Image 1: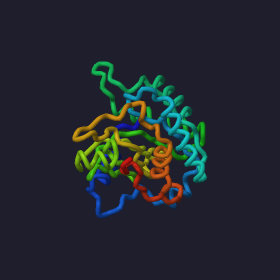
Image 2 (image 1 turned 135 degrees about the vertical axis):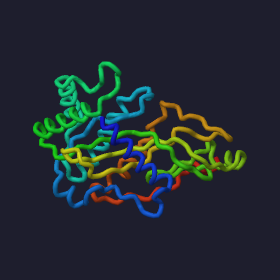
Image 3 (image 1 turned 90 degrees about the vertical axis):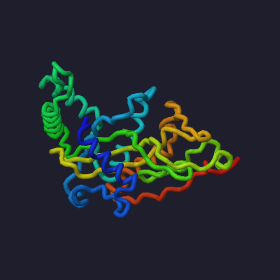
Image 4 (image 1 turned 120 degrees about the vertical axis):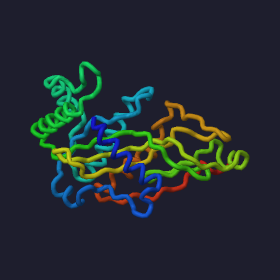
Length: 254
């Protein structure tokens, strides 16, 4: 619901992945961490954005909202479920006549901004929220080398069949699309405070010298990776450390 800014947010995170800012560690805090801690007590969740081609998106949405809410509560925040934002958003859309141009069908960014502002104002009045969290499951282009992709705090071995298959098929480098949990915390005036991402899984695997798409039914099926992505994305916000990525056993021969 904040797609214009999400583009710039993902671009900044992509730079971190691909090495444009390799000399400087990425800092997710857009304002001092102490300011967030002192000013933010109640966080309202915005409905999560997920890939449009998921076979059954509702369980995925529920899983990640539950994980994100639990992590914020663990950090001492009160959490307003995304249903509250969604209800107010729909009411504002109806009252203000939406934000799409009836002639062209294109989004009117000024109307969109107005709907968003009215929604945040009503949300704050109703729930006392002093911050909102936009979050999404976003595809990101990431680099890989020696058949291993590394991005947003995680890594994944891409060769199907493990090290034995790599021995027969070779070692490859390049880019691949992978999924990350992207989070964007803003104050109730829509000023960005914290932006971060946690890697989840790749969208393709290497089979010999070609890519094979991961079946949509297998996306987000690894609970450990889902939990880890939330930890990577939100642990800095709540003052927790993130465990360094461990190489998984998928490189071993069988």
